[in-house]
Each structure stands twice: as structure tokens, then as C-alpha cells.
Length: 256
Image (tube, rainbow, N blue to C red; front, side, top):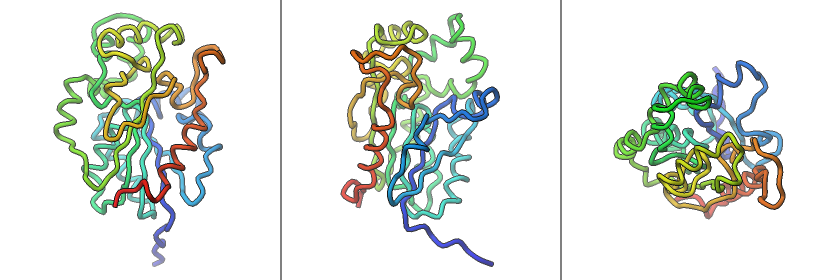
């Protein structure tokens, strides 16, 4: 029986957020969460992967599915790049499901490590956005409350041999698409600067790399607002990910 040889190249694995797979794909089979990245990202010396998980499942269930995907990779060095809830899936995966310690780094982007006050707003008020979230994103979204994330952080400590880095997005309410402005103002009052879904403070984990001028969907290449050069909309996400991957693959950036 032939056994696949280990891949000497590192693997870059992109992990999507809570609405990344089954919900949108039912109406749009060709939908790709990280817009344009597969086509533009030619990471020399690395393989690039985009696994899918159920949109509204629990963190533990999503991480368990990712475990199966990761187990099939032949690479002995794996680097995770995760957006939104995908960052929590990744932290659970690293802590519970990587016995061979092949995962070397995790970079989170707009991840609610300390939860989001918007979950309470979704759960207790009426509106189009709230109704959509309650219909399509339960029960997973309930794991994103500040209280649930505080418990998650206690139960899911970082591994000392993994490099944890994070990025946040931020725009003031006046720069947001109309659909996001109310959420942005609510988060601003509760938690400060934010990307309409996650505050900058909540997005910080491990080594904080900085804040980019982008809303939550712009971070993965989807722009619901009118293009405006003055406010740098849309966010140039492909260049951001190209530089991010280049930095990850630098040997000096890897933990010993």
C-alpha cells in the first residue's frame, strides 16, 4: 500500500467565520468567503487551503471538522489564518486537536476573542439583521457573548510553541454602509472602536499587529458601501493577505 510522502512545504490554512459555508452557498454555490484570495495568493513554497465548516455550529463541532481536514494534510508545518469566529475555532483546534504539534502559528483577523456585545442586541431586539441572525446563526452565535468567550479563554489556554498574532479592523459609523451603522454605534458605546461586528479591544490576542481601515466584511474582501478613495474604501484586502502570508513564511517569524 502506497503511503503519501510528507510535504516539505508549509501549509497555509484559511478559516472562515460564522457565515462562511452552508447558508450562503445554498443560494450562491460559487461563493468564496475569502474573496479573490485563492486566485491572487500565489504563496511561493507553500500550499494554500480553504476548508469549510457548518455556519452556525458550535466552536467545538467546527474545530472537530477542521481536525479531520488538518489530519489529511501532508505538511509538517501548518500556519492558520482565521477571520471572525474562525479564530476561536482555530484556538480550540490548536489546543485540543493537534497532538503532533504541526501547527506553528495562528493569525486572527477581526476575531471576537472577548466576545461581542452585539449578541445581546441580536437576542433581545427586533429588526431585519436580528431576525436573519436568529434564524441562520443559532446556536453558534450564542458562544460569542462576552461571558461565553471569557469561559472559553479560561478553558482554552494558548500553546507555548505556537505563535499567536492578531489584527483588527475599524471604521467610524459615518464610513460604514447603512446596514452596519446602528451596530457600529452600539459597539462604540459599549466597547470602543470597532469594525461593525467586533471591537478592536476584543480582536487583540497574542502579538497585536495593528488595526486596518476596514469593516468586518471588508476584511475578507466584501464591500457593501460605495467606493470612496477619500476613506480608502474598499479595503485593499488582497495586498494585505499577500504581505501577511509573506511575513508568516519568513523563517525568523516562526517560533523555535
